[in-house]
Length: 158
Image (cartoon, rainbow, N blue to C red; front, side, top):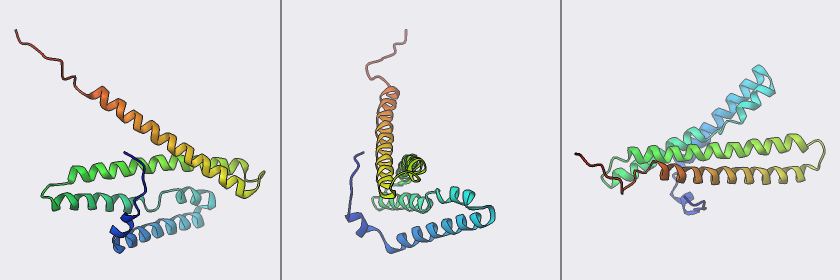
């Protein structure tokens, strides 16, 4: 899988899909605000770290993939699950990178200029997320290679 930007996807996305993402994000953010009000900002902040549009995004991606396959006369269920799983994996990798962003900010924000800290945190997020993606890609290749049944092995009955 190559990392790429597809601007045309913005035109293919229906406004209802943007609305669903917006509503999910707003509801999760509002819930985090209520939690912060009840239990304090430290606890509420943990809930703000939740990828707010993830539930809507992964559901919409799966549904869109199933619809694409059904238009071709196929079930699409397995492909939809695969797309949702790939999106979930990407969210996890991005979240690990986001944790590095937070660590850099927490360590340096009181000592250095805020703009410099943000640039360093962004660099950390990019580097960690990219490294996680690279490791996952290599791991998947290695796992696929390991689990492939050798085509030259034959069993003989005597």
